[in-house]
Length: 371
Image 1: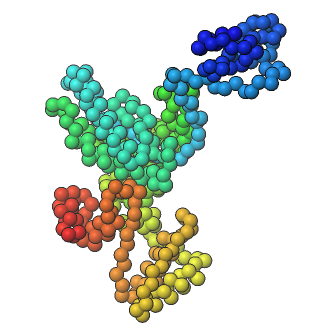
Image 2: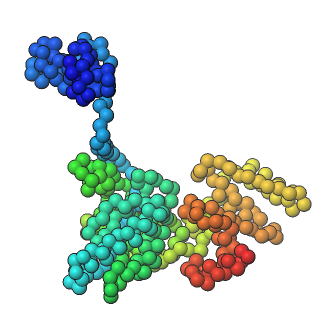
Image 3: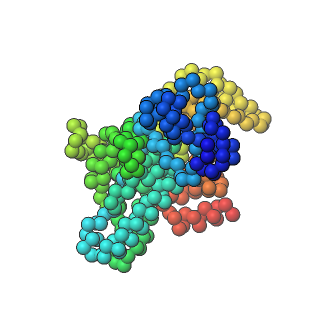
């Protein structure tokens, strides 16, 4: 027998070439027909080619061609969905040459994609002059709703600086919603459907986008519940949207708020009485008294997420409200890993009363404080 790959002569009963390792054609023991190396049944008589065979399992034949990616199955996920739409693109088509209009849309897409991916989101599709993005797929974070709004605010700030064509001012409107959807390869018919998300949230975001004014962000009620008081809002009231039986409460995001922590943001009206933590709180108060007496004390409170560490710390601060002390709060953030001394700068910024939107003067004051 001759190897079809390297033309080397090999014994007739061989399964693999001794020279190159290629799987050899398989002759049918019933009719003698030569079948491919991967065949399990004879193409001529239909006889099984593996019956009673003692040869090892057939290996996968290596190929120099790039493998076809396996489409991921659709799955049920909690997502925050963002849709960014460029305002006035239809009017631009009558003012600009098609190539100029294409450069404007491309610049807008690039701007949105940069801000979305920098905050852990994924651009799912480019829909004409719009951008559809997911936060929470394929990688989920505990603060995906917050990341989406921060990305939207960054886009609103970056888009007016674009100058892709003369006498063209680029504007956008953004809608953000959160909820459970089915996302993944839904129909297995190409890339355009690979990242499709089906569910009420997808349609809600499309409806909300039509309500937004140019250069504004509107969010759904679920997104507002997830982020709490982390941002400042303008209440737009309840709107009746096509396809939804109940009116939807819509809010416009104005910017980041002045809250110190996510715990404070999610409990703007205070907290309920602390239950079942009397022993831990008593130990903290005991160490506080020792610290007041001149004995240095450092307490590390650690545990699994969600068991109430921030709640205990808040209860301790409430108990110490009548004692003279200076509380210093420092908070790390996964969104600012590339910002040196971020917790220290944030605490000093709050202490100095510097507003977050004071870009020029604020940065100078921060530098002066640190020096």
